[in-house]
Image (cartoon, rainbow, N blue to C red; front, top):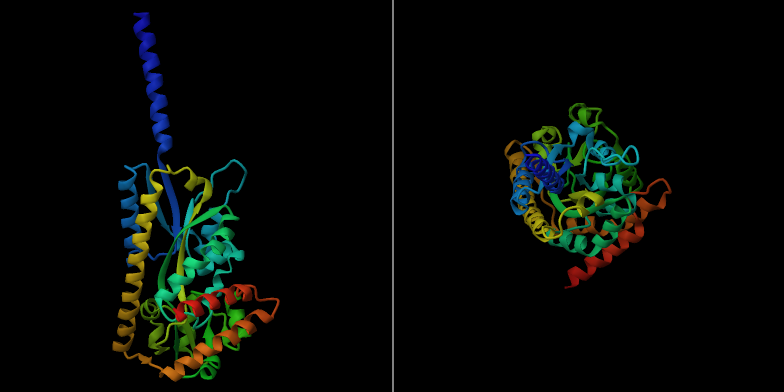
Amino acid sequence: MKKFVRNAVVFAFASLLVAGAFAQQRINLKIGSVSPDNSPWSVEQKKMAQEWARITNGEVTVTFMNATALGGENGVIQKMKVARPGQKAPLDGGIFTNIGIYELAPESHVLTLCMPFMFKSQDEIDYVIKNTENHINKAIEDQGFYLIGWFNVGMLYFCTKEEVRTLDQLKKVSLSVGGITSPELGKAFQHAGYTTSDVSNEKILSSLKSSTGCGGLYTIPMYAYAAQYSKYAKYVLNMPICPVMAGFVVNKQVWDSVPEKYKPALLESLKKTENVFIGVQQKNDADYLQKIADDGGVLTNLTPAEKQAFYDSMSEDAVRMTQSGEVKVINYPFFKEVEALLKKYRGQ
């Protein structure tokens, strides 16, 4: 009888150890995301999370949380950092815009990719990201994280109260740099000759309504329409300024704990989601530009010569943006590297 009891105890203890080991294998990634709830981006994130759970038989799961509820991108960054040695951070990673990536890792110089009129197509964006990712990734890894994926979630456009067709006209418009941009990026625009006003996100609409408020802003078409900005800044310069990228960043230790056998399939799943994001972004931009036009907005289509004048100004603006010691967001050596890559790509 004693032997039976002893064996039962040993078996139960062994079962607990096995169960404990199995439980330790389960990894739930808690990720703060800038994706708005119920948006197409949010839907694709959930699909990817389901795919990861299927690939790993439930060993790796992802829970996405809205960044706004966590205090914005900066709030997510703070929750990704450990308060005390030995503690686990509340969040394992985040999906950030260019601005959030810059705030996490300034040495990435990622906001240099926000230079106005640098890119002419999605293919150019993809080419530059592919050829500069080592530079960007190293800066993020130095902060203790991996950048495992990039998403293009939209293109920024200028929306103004009065129609503009030249860069000189545009630079005279008082542009709101609240909401989807940053004060530092606003300063960089000022050094390039733009007129900016740091209007907070919740006051942009009232400022646009006022005759003494801002004269326009730059944002993605979906926000311009959904927030009713385009009702008052109804002229949309139908020429994308720059992409709004979203980077998927994960804590290095957490990602290293994911079994190696799953990582190729997980990253392949992420890559498919990136491609879907790009398709969604391009459709969203086109759909919402059309909605703006249907709602009384005006899409200003420039002639090839007028467009070229904007492109020609980019290099001069990059120099102006980096002349002042107070502006750090645009890195001139990195800009020249990107410019050389684009020249090579266009030559091909």
